[in-house]
Amino acid sequence: MTDTPLESYEIYAVKYARRDATRNEHLIFKDPHDDASMPMDYFVWAIVGKRKTYVLDTGFDRVEGEKRGRTFLRQPAEGLRMIGVEASDIDELIISHLHYDHIGTWDDFPKATLYLQEKEMQFATGRQMRHATLRHSFAVEHIEGVIRALYDDRLVYCDPVEELAPGLTLHYVGGHTHGLQIARVWTRRGWMVLAVDASHYYMNFEDLRPYKTVHHVGDMLEGYRLIAGLAGSPKHVIPGHDPLVMERYPTASNETDGIVVRLDADPLY
Amino acid sequence: MVDMPEYEVYAIKYGDHKRMRQENFLFKDPHDEASSIDFFIWVLQGGGKTYVVDVGFEYREAETRGRSLHRLPSEAVRMMGADPGKIDDVIITHLHYDHAGDLESFPNARFYLQDREMAYATGRCMCHAPLRHPYAVDYVVNMVRLVYDDRVQYVDGEMQIAPGLSVHHIGGHTDGVQSVRVWTRKGWLVLASDANHFYDNMAIPNPFPIVYNVGDMLDGYEKLRGLADGNEDKVIPGHDPQVLGLFPAASSELEGIAVALHEDPVGDMNKVWRRTK
Image (cartoon, rainbow over all chains, first blue to last red; front, side, top):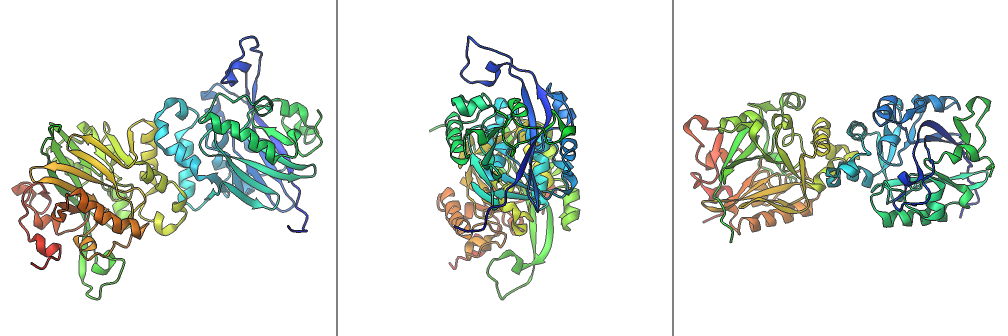
């Protein structure tokens, strides 16, 4: 144990796209009596320390979003700029996984070193990509970009638990893809977990209801336990795609209303 | 036992590179001399079909690395009377630049590759420049695109591609290098590719210096002998210029370019394998 207090980080969620959907579209085990509207938000996150800012995921761009019928709101780098984070200055880019909505604008971060799980690359380039249903969420141009970053010495493959800095660790979670990782961050209100696609919505980890885009259901359910163990409380967990996040946290500033919320602030629920 | 066709197997040279003999061995040999490394692809014909093993490099990579490219690998296939556009099955022994470059010339082919080779070529070992050096990132991403086009058949260990034709994971040189075993009129023939570069690597043994795991490479020499039913004469190294002199030419026009590996050797096999008797 060290007596040095951990540095606490500020965390921001930046919304860059959305889509309409219903509840049953998200669930493996459907609920026949209730198929309410359940739209999805798309985020990238900034983890801002006193000395360094980390960005978690890069979203997708307009072309990819429109190809897939998403409502594109802004380039993720533009949303980050609203809180003073310049993508072109970022040195450390955490990639939770290689799905199209998490790695799409990697080239807006030309200086960054990428942090990724090796298993994710193996999954995204390996034998299971012959299955259209698993391949569908990847864009091969994105994978190509990441491999080129690897050959340019700009990619670090993380251990299953990787400490990037005191107060910031990455944790491998299977289930959604073969190599998803989530972030645990020390903040003014304790240990928070950016669950990304280990829990798309609050209901996934709260009610243990697996999301339908899944590689391994057992691992996804194990992931909900891992999330619970890493977070200070359920209110310290930030799901990856839930529009409730925008309601449950205050805006970062007057200018960012409905676009950026501050996650290390006291929640409004 | 299923009837196995007897395959005809050809090695076709598509390029070479002059270098010192020392450069072929992990442990230094005091008798250094000028030497060369030949670049081959292999064409297999049997059961009414033509199979290609490896697709070499193309002009751009040859220039980048200062290698002599005598003909495109797809042109070498054509010299054997086969149309690259009509080849259905291409075995890629591994993804190094001199084995996986001319992919686009085979627009209808399915490519057989070990899972572990792609994992290696896109994995954490590529953070190390010495291990990365023999790979060309353009070739690697081309193969990934083929994965997304559903044109890669991944192999986990070994697989029979057709009766009398199979691939076998060896490892060592790269984590996922595989060799080819094929039935011929002389019995099993093994195309080692880079599981054994030169006769001397395996005969001494003294491993080739581009190596990921020396233990696996040395184990691999034993595996290759086993695949050849214990007869090392049936193990064809991947880069040895002596191959062109040890076997008869595929035809009189292809003297010095292509040899028939399924025919009886015309050179002294005892000498290349350093057998005294």
